[in-house]
Length: 274
Image (cartoon, rainbow, N blue to C red; front, side):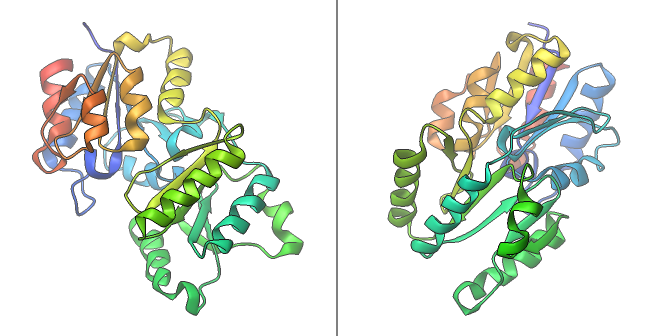
């Protein structure tokens, strides 16, 4: 099979544990691009962060951001965007507060988080980390007066965090039970719930991009590590899990490559694409 597109997750797939792109992965991506392969960064991260990292590649990739809520072409033009309704935002904020969970939500370029109080003091460092390492702007959630004006038709993803695995599982079950007809829940790490509109996921983002480019799913390769990569890996003609991936994804994948610390992305590109 001559593959025409490769979609790659960022954290713990393309990136090393210290959030770098290895020289080997960079070289393989550049060779694939130069050979006419569509290179797609497919991430749960906010678009601005994916865009910032893409500048290291030396070319503009296509970007599937916020778990498929945004699909952007290589000229930074928006192909697709799915925004959360205001009533859903209010519901999720109230649910997080009721269960004493930290939360934040994204537009394409801004992370909105609660004003840091003693209750959320430990997350003050998170906000600084977002601003520094994810290269995005962090703002307090707008007041009631400004809430709808600032956030209407703007927010694409909501995330809740909790180290107590049973507690966060229970909250996720509540969302699925109460709003399962409108919302999609997934996770990129053991301590979070990522919430999007129903049907929004990386696999759907890949489908939308394939239709836009005229590429069949059989001509795609997708590489990931976590639960939020499952639909993408299932959708692609060749679905790949890195060695450090969760078991669920490994069972879904057609092939298991080397880990993110062993240039697993480069290994796939050199073995199946170039």
